[in-house]
Structures are given as structure tokens and as C-alpha cells.
Image 1 (tube, rainbow, N blue to C red):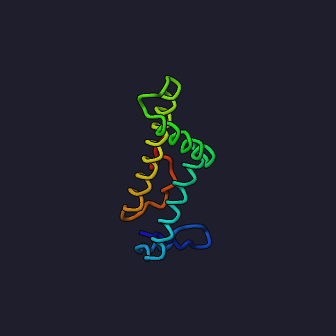
Image 2 (image 1 turned 135 degrees about the horizontal axis):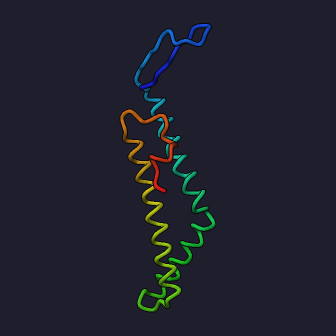
Image 3 (image 1 turned 180 degrees about the vertical axis):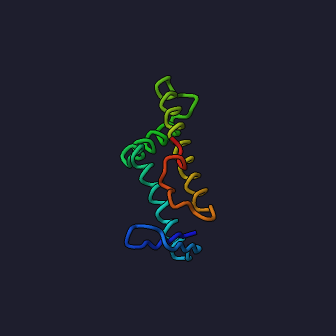
Length: 114
């Protein structure tokens, strides 16, 4: 629900109107949620790190897990943790998009994984 307050000259609320979001407002909120998810992912895992992780994954895949040394095993575990975090951000985004109503404070940290 969208809340609109009307104030008098002294700053007192004199009228409150609540109405559902329009389809266009919902579409804008969903795009804003997606942008917030992307911002959080980019902040923790910038594109250059994502590219490096993809290259490492392909290299490890080609070598085969049975042939990994200890450093490669650790790198695979670290990359898996980052992948799981990325998935959790995407899931949080999906959950927010599915909420009815979508919370206006969807950028608050409480909605997102740490």
C-alpha cells in the first residue's frame, strides 16, 4: 500500500490516503529490487572477481577434481562459498519481488544476506 499524508501549515497531519500500488509502480519496485541485488553483488564480488572465478572454475573442471592439489581444493571451496552467497542474494531478491505488498524499505539490510 502506498501512503500519502497531507499536512497543514504547522506540519500536522490532516489527511492520510492509502492506496494499492499501481502495476507500473510494482514494475518499478521490482526493477529497483533487482538493481539493489546487483549493487550488493557487485560490492562484494565485482565483475573482475566473477570473471576470474569463472576462469578458475573452467580450469579446475578441465583438470578434474581427482587431480586438484591442496591450493586448488581450497580455491574451489572458497569459490563455492561465494557462489552460495550470490544465490542467497538472488533468492532474497526473488522473495522481495513476490511480497504483497513489496516493502518500501526493501534496501534495508534485514532483507538481505550478510
